[in-house]
Length: 548
Image 1 (spheres, rainbow, N blue to C red):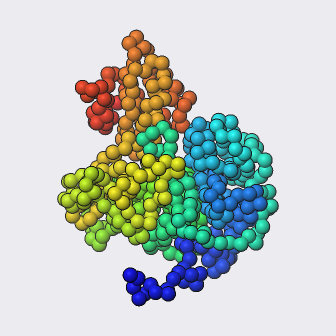
Image 2: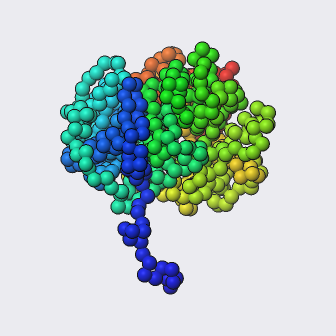
Image 3: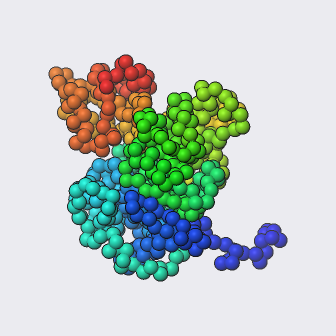
């Protein structure tokens, strides 16, 4: 029986609106229309100008028949069109599919087909790769290709589309009626992640989760109004960890960056007064290990966020020497990027560097607006003891979790079994409630922030005529965090060399997926013939045992 508080009290337009990050840019354009929004080389645009361009993009897409549930893919670096895509595409009801610009044509073709993209917007730097991908598509469905021009790009230009991006925008109505989704459960983005199979899985985000994670970013960082955010993190990674929407909510500045290079980063920080940036460990490592001549005149107190491998003591010391404040977060594509944070406690700053590194290496506690994160027994779903020793699986529950995997109900059901999202990461929980990863149950290698499926690499190795058996595991790497290490057992009489294997892999894989180390020999196996990967991981962890 309904309570007295439910009788005749129902949600209506006056007291209920669907949560969506699309409201952030609308408010900022109204309240701070003249504030700087985008910096790209010599280009400067205000929030009013960016909002107008987003409405033009929406209007142009609508004129071409794009509407609710359609997919619009983009192959863009961290440039102004990528910022605009995060608003102008979903406001039509369509779904943004930001493609990983580092992938090979075969994988991109799969994503375009699987996501049923109707439009793709392409930066000139990636035109050649996209041209190959388009030729490899299995779907015969029409696909509108739009070419972007960028004054900051100095390489060769090949037009593969039917029109230019700015021409496309000009065809759209600058007065396009901005609107929230009818339902906050509507899809806002599609992001592909490498699982333990060759084909990536399509992770579907909803408006509610995107809005809440964007706000959580603000809360975790105490991010002020008008923050100056440097785009070192690719926006194709979990929609830039939701920061395109976060920056809009704070009426901040998007400092765009085509390439992640130390000199360009330091110059941007000095020139634009950067206050915040994110990145994989390799990005922070590049800065720490840069020549001292690059580091003069840096402002103190820049907020840096790191995810991926835990920051070692040397990185923490290096960032402190730069005057940067480092925050360690953890998450997955399925939870919109970062969903836990190693929240610093009073007194940690007084500890020696070794103890600070130990504490900061933990994945921490849940984000503000994530309902719950626990280390649970994978079978019983009961919490493991908080003793820092008993291992279980990290599981998430709440609004900051994907809708599910596109066209893959089996994988979705498995991921959400028992009412929790199963991360596949094995961890312990300490008495203070902080989580620390100990191992991965999935055979995924995380290299420079990129996920690499070991099975995908193994499939390529098995296609070499000299290979009898192959296994790929992660090898620790100072620069990249991890890189693929291939253990190869050759057929009798075969003479393939490391160079032969690498050349073969380069023909079929994106560069970052190619094994950096190749070890020849008989693979350790169980009595049933299963390769013992735990033994190979032990060997890969010993630099002396690996041919690099």
